[in-house]
Length: 232
Image 1 (cartoon, rainbow, N blue to C red):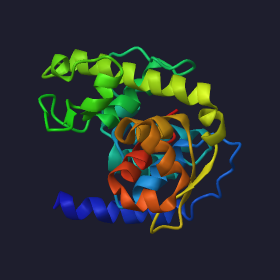
Image 2: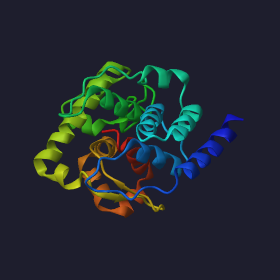
Image 3: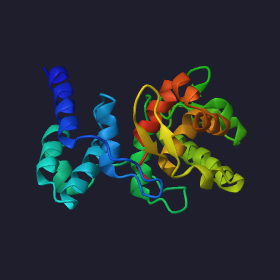
């Protein structure tokens, strides 16, 4: 029954929210934009995205939409406590607070902690070759949530540093990204860029940004972008 009700709820909310707003490259991606992107993809938004969208709906005076989001996607404690429970990590990115960083990390945690394939390891599906590149032995993070958190922070702090030094960070943040097989065009945020880097690496991320064909060729990367973009 739940499997039937959730898609119906998604369709209803998309209709209630109407057409997506035209993106403004100079504007910060709103929580409702990110929330609506999930719905248009037919996906249920994570609880922290729903919570941020709920609060934004209240802030713009749309109490009916806020109530609909809360009823459909939030447990009672989420609206009462103010924030979902997040893993305790310190943000490694200058200007990014701990809470949004932890929200971002919770999206990247898409595998069990003991995940270990030929190319990837851990709950963040870290690239083994990328870990070796930044001086981390992949075996050293096996089955350890704390070690995997440290590795994630090291990986994306290094990626952020290289993107900033090369000028690519300033070039792409705020850039409009067209989504394959969709009319959606989203404004790239820092979290969206780092989300792509986490799965595609630095060179792969730049190729993904430059080419819509690459975004279509690698749907898992595009899906992770949709899930992480706009968190910060």
